[in-house]
Length: 289
Picture 1 (tube, helix red, strand yellow):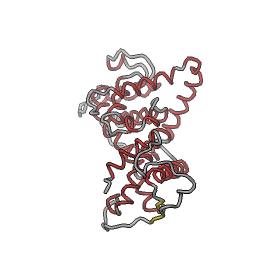
Picture 2 (cartoon, rainbow, N blue to C red):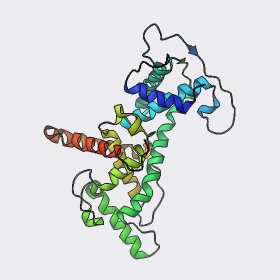
Picture 3 (cartoon, one colour):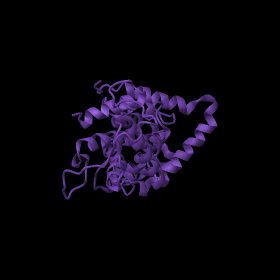
Picture 4 (cartoon, helix red, strand yellow):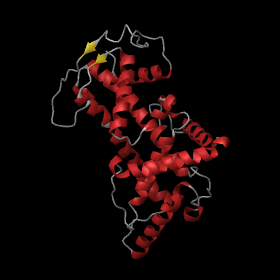
């Protein structure tokens, strides 16, 4: 029996190039579309959140492949999707899993929710990794003193003004960085989130992450702003980083980036920045290949 994890490794190899490997790793042609038509068999019932392990082995293999593709697609193309985008991503990912496994699995509402639930997990994971970095790198202080609270408020306002946290922050935190998107925090969180080990999306899905995607980059800026927002009162709060709360912020950042790209396209400024981000991610010291 092929384990779900082994299937994921095979699947990512398949995505990059249609490999002539085992029988189930081939491009599905018109004659193959309906070779195997199956329904998911649920073998475990419980009251908690549904998971792939609740289903039979074939369904687990299919869901693992679909989730991997969906997760990479989501981060690279529509990290804060509306319902229409979510549906499109799911359909494309389902089709890729069909091509890889050779299984024509009937799509159900329960399986669809199981796969798309991974979208919100991306936001939570990103914020969890960012939160301690924001406090240390920008110099916020957890304190009840009036002076510390006032300092935190001023710092949060200054960082958000003109998106200083992504541009020039040397006057705020003694980092001699004045270039757009070259603040060390941005590369650090990207490395931690997508390039920390050989199983992360940045390594396994170069098709989606080389060069580093504009939408993913703007998701990072949006998450940083969310973490800074938690300090605007002077004391660190807890703000949910959700699509509902931050989609408009994300879309504003993405529009600004697209305008910047249009204004500098002759010099390939943004493409060069994103290519360098990807290359830097490939050489994360802690990454085990």
